[in-house]
Length: 409
Image (cartoon, rainbow, N blue to C red; front, side, top):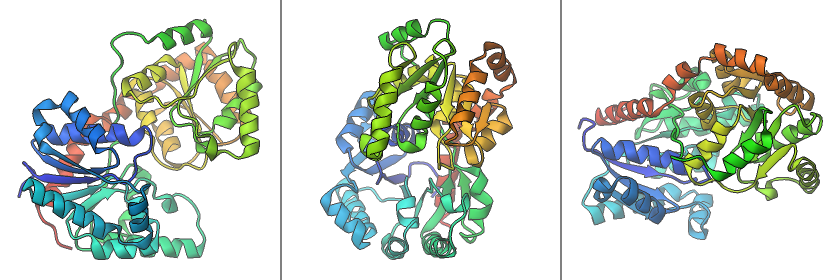
């Protein structure tokens, strides 16, 4: 079979706020417009169907959505017992019976849940009976030093998962680990997956954005936008903010703040710093920004972005948004994002968690002359040429070509 009119089963086991909803919309819009049919296993099938009916009504009969989530009691038991893949196979078989379709390829959007545990890897290799491929989001063991035991465990689990006959290909967002991963997966293709994202803006300027710009006045706006987990460096940013004079710049922090992810002492410090900075120095908006166009409006409102994530080694879709809207960034030194920022001259690097370096980098970019020079040198368009919807479409075509050839290894 060639890659026309295939039936793709997308298995979405992880539905964190933000990234996965927008990625699902991109995948569906490309696959449906290319003529394929999709069986979707995800936590919010009704929400996805409503989006398809609104955004892609001509193809609503090409989507079959099934409830599936790891946070439910039944699936939690399946996950812990190792029988999750057997359960996935049963769900797909039921969907095939109800639709009359035959699945050509299973695409797993979060392979990490199987690869990162030897027990689950063993059951995965024994129980998923369909040809499959998937995205390995966080191959952290290829970016950091682990103990001998941890390295051995990860080698065993990846070997069991990626060497099974039904595996067609593995996709990674971090090009820096491709060569190392390729040595552990035999002769299976390892594809570089573009970190594409929604790029549009609202038709009119949002009222909160107008207010933020009025509060900032002539001061440059430094933004931290998105899920505000500890790894995003929020505490480091706020500690640096405390050391910066009000007239130097204005801070915009917007996104969901999961308070339970912080320790009690960290929550107390966050409360103090937020209270001290609110108003004259900063605007805080702690809510999940569901609409991707609204999210983009907050990114576009900034003069530069703070992305010095801590203990995070791979790709981020917000870096693509920075390229789309031509916003210089501050990132943590080392690893994927710093390699990209250095290669494309898109901003500054600091040591993640270093308050002094964060303060210095913010003040550098807050200087309009310096900021202008960075923007002149930055190759935003070149970066964007590798991470966009068209690149994602081509990556999906490549994946389906590989599947259509029915490789057997």
